[in-house]
Length: 245
Image (cartoon, rainbow, N blue to C red):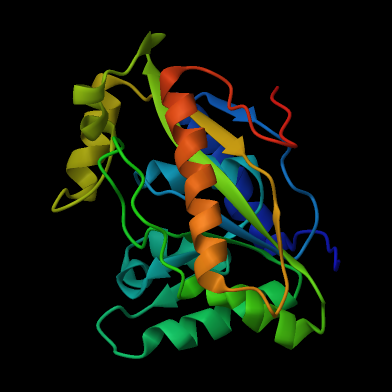
């Protein structure tokens, strides 16, 4: 597998998000083995904008984001420094172009986070993973000449706040979804206190050009759902090949 050191452009957002996590009071706990190989496609669930802070604080990564983010003051610049792949969701046939862009980024030895649900949830469930964008793994294989690329299932959960479990009825207050605005949600986090974040790294899925992307998406979805449920219950996931610590 191709392995490269993160570029300087990714180090800046990585350090910024580490500082942001500390400023917000987010304690990040990792379970499982954080991957070091590149290229790497991370298939994660999506709860909130906090996910971006948590994942980027944990490791230098690029994201896939809606095109509007590019115009947000400050955040847009940071996103561009992070080699974010912007998606115009209003354009038809955008999925194939996005998969090619992700594939090109991966073939250059990057680590790209794909929020595979396609939207954020209320944190009481993990939505079905969309297989279309996981086709980016096959695009990367074609572009890089590699025989195998890893798809890494990653679970993001926020199970505790102020040292106490976050109950099911309170989880939507942490989630950022629907018509919620970013300033209001940020103010709520600052007012009520940041939750603990648990990142769980599952068993990497080795993908070849012959693999069915629907089956890969379903496998990643099931693993992320199981890891998220375990994290929200406050227990370590029992998954083959995963060591917690």
